[in-house]
Length: 120
Image 1: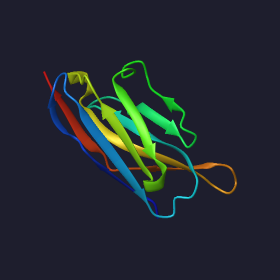
Image 2: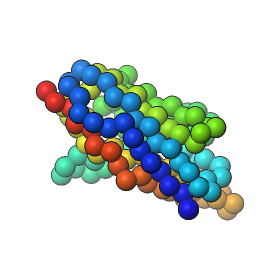
Image 3: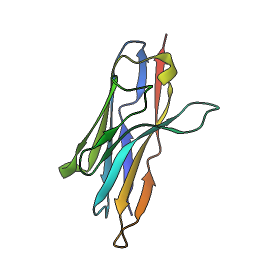
Image 4: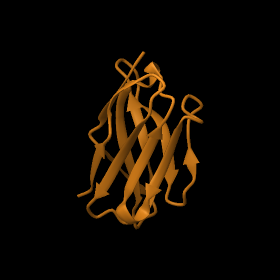
């Protein structure tokens, strides 16, 4: 079984920074991508940062230039550095992992989420 454990959420004032981390454990195999999604109350879950096993990153315009995703392959850990935080960044942040199967498809795993609250 694969487990994802997030840490680093909390309360921060607008303009501040937080760093989230997510450690994957278990029979992971080959990583297709890791990343972070968030879900605010009453809204759909949205992607905020993804990084492929080859190091290609992707961000939506809403966080581009403020958030940075990175991965430590040796530790199967993905990080999210969040700077210049805004109240609209308040949400539960979920870690996501997609691993390759032997059939060339992907299997997706989710963490339980960590709360990020940005006060104005």
